[in-house]
Length: 177
Image (tube, rainbow, N blue to C red; front, side, top):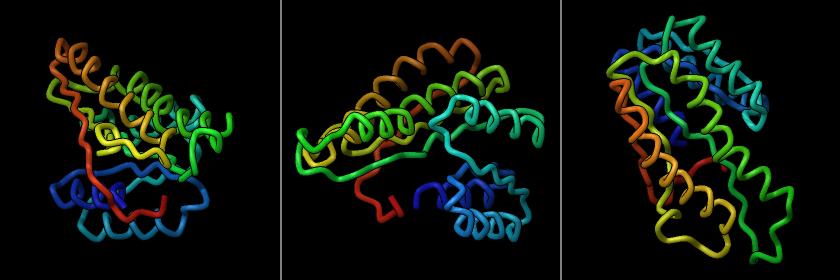
């Protein structure tokens, strides 16, 4: 999906990368890490679920331990589930979607900022769903709209540190989610 493409693109441009992924995605993460390493770059794999703040902090700490600092933070993780309508949205689904798509982004940025140098960049992956929401993706679409708003406010804050914050909003992409 998008995460794989991002990791490979950054590696091909000369970056070492850290890959955060769910433990059940180990085979995919291993394949991505091997491809990154085949391009001559270092790949650090960190399995875990970023719906927990402690895991987000551990991801950032691992990046600092391995690389010394963070140049670019790409927030790409997402949870998406199709529903028939709002009546089909459970509290558990809403929580999981917001914790993965919004809370984790917030926690990762908060932990990463002190580890970023001037010229660094934060890239948050939104979606066309932020602007053209589908009723069958209401929880997901809501988080993608929140990402756009979060990023606009964040950009105004981090500019004082010489950092950039941007969001990208791809259209439909065939990914495992």
